[in-house]
Structures are given as C-alpha cells and as structure tokens.
Length: 412
Image (cartoon, rainbow, N blue to C red):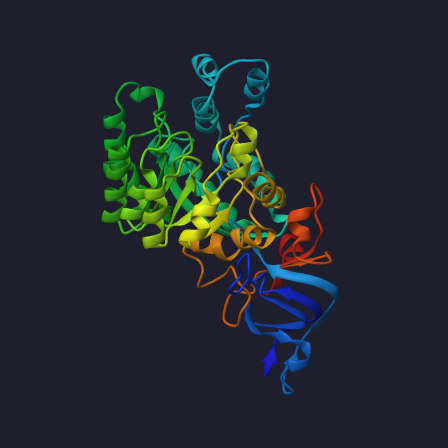
C-alpha cells in the first residue's frame, strides 16, 4: 500500500459517531495515511498494514488531530465598521434609534456597495485568515450586504475568490432576503419579487450560489415572503436554510423543514413543533453564541429538546459587523459550552461533522475516515475537551487541507 504521507505518534479524534455520551471517536497512539489528498488509512499505530509505504513520514510528537474545523454560518464578506453602534448601544441608544440615524444593516450595505471588488476582497480575506489560523478548513459565506444584483454579485464573486486564493473550501449562500434596501422602502413584496425573479436566477446561472437563505423575523421578512424565496430556490435546484426564531417565533423552523432545509439558524425562540419538524427532515440546528453574547440576549435555545429529538446541533461564528464581529471559532466553541450548556464533545461535533451536514458536505469532510478529504488539524492539547476549555488561546500546531500543509499553500 503506497501513500503520499504518513502521520504517526498522534492521537486522533475522528468524530465518527461523536455524541455527548460516545465522546470524540478517539484513537490513541494512532497513525493517519494520506493519498491523493484523501485519508487512505487511519487507526491504531500498532495496526498499520505491514505493506504500507509512505513517501513522507511526519512525527506528530504526541499531538491530537481533529478534522478540519467548519464554520457553517458567516457573513464575512462586507465593508465598513460598526463599532460606533456598539459604543452607542452601551451608552443607551436603542436599535431603532441607531437605525433612524442611518445605522444598522443598511450602513453596512452602503459601505459594501461603495467598495471595489478588490477592496472588498482585501478586508474580507483578513477576517478569513484569522479563522484559518485556528484550524478552519471549510467556511460558508453569505451575501446579503449588497441587496441589489450588482452588489450581491460582487460579494459572491469575492466569496468564490476567497476559496480560490486561500487554502480552504468555501460554500456560498445567497441571502438577498436579508433586509429591505432603501430604494424599496415600504415595498417589501416588490423587493422579494426582485430577489426571486431577477437576482436569484441570474446569480445561480452564473454559478455563484450553492444555497439560499432568508431572514425570517418581524424586523426581516414574513414567513410567506421567505416561502416565495424558497420556491424560487427550488426552481433553480438549490437547497435552502433560514435565519429562524432569533428574536421571536415566526414558525421559520417548520417552514424551512417543510422545504427539506439544510439548517435553521439562531433558534432562541424555537418551539416544540419546530423541533419536531426539524427532527423529521434532518434539518440541522445551527447555534450562534457570538450573536447571543454580543446582543446580551437572555433566552436560550432549547438545547435539551434538540438533543432528545435527535436534531444535529452545529456551532458557528455568525461573523458579521453588527451582531457578532467574531473571527474565532474556538471562542464560539467555548461560548456554546458556557452559554448554551453544550458538552465539549457536542461543541466539537458542532464545528465538524454536524457543521458538514449543515453545508451538505458530510460525504467530503467533518470526520476522519478513509475516502474523505484529508482536512485535519494538529493541536498541542492534552485532550480534545481542551479546545472548549481554554479561553483566548490557540493551540493549533499545523493545518492540513486536502493532504497539503496550509503553511506551504499560503507560502506558494
């Protein structure tokens, strides 16, 4: 058996069958072989095939290996800065007052529309590189700060470019139904017509979209308007997901489950009927503790109900300028444990196998097993729970994507 590289003297958290009870799918004193960018063999070092030959053998010096981390919900492509709004909220200003001053999502829309494609790439790449340094090898990037065809196209082109020029996998999501742009003020249905009849078909035809999202909320779009977006997505053959039940129960989880949605995200106000609907269709619950923390929310998502119903739970940064300016998935793991009471094993599954399911990439990544892409991270830790335990540290020693060192790829 010939392979390109063989990693030895490591412990591996494969995340196969990982649950709160079952742990991390651990293999101690392990070895991992890579061929053509994929895992060729993995198991206890004592069980290595006698005929295995490697072009290169790497001594892991006792490191732990996990699958490459997956950030399955981000808005990382945007221009501008909203720290002034953060300061204003701390000084007592309400969200409505900030919006009346021209702030909120529309301030980011103005900055993103005004930025050139190269400038938008530059500022977005800086954020993505911060995620990369913590072992993120796959990321979802939403549009939604353009809100017209040309600006949404620009954002999605930048997202595709990030996937070409940086050593990570990018999945793009069209979020045209994020907010009502100023030129459609008072005409939400007309804007949804534009999203469904012009923007989505055009961007899908240009190959810029992998999935479709919407913001179903009293300050966003109604369930009926979001359903129109879902129907349009179905017409062009794209899967859907939804910002659901963040600030109120709009029945969004049931809606997205009805359309076989990949995920429902936020979910602080998720109802029992929403949990049941997601359980029946396999829709992933994506928890976003950064937004919960940044907005100082108090209502917790119903984690125990999701557990009992067997709903997969993912965790993501929700990196965005207004409610979660977070570029640390490791911190999101810690927050998921401390704020939402996930176990460390659940939180790590939330940024590996369950996040892969939220992006329909579970056949490619999210666990370490033969045939899957060789995306993995070496960590200087004593046990996998350390990734959830330590606040503000980054024990990442090395990152491998598709069998190739990320450091080497960045230098090339």
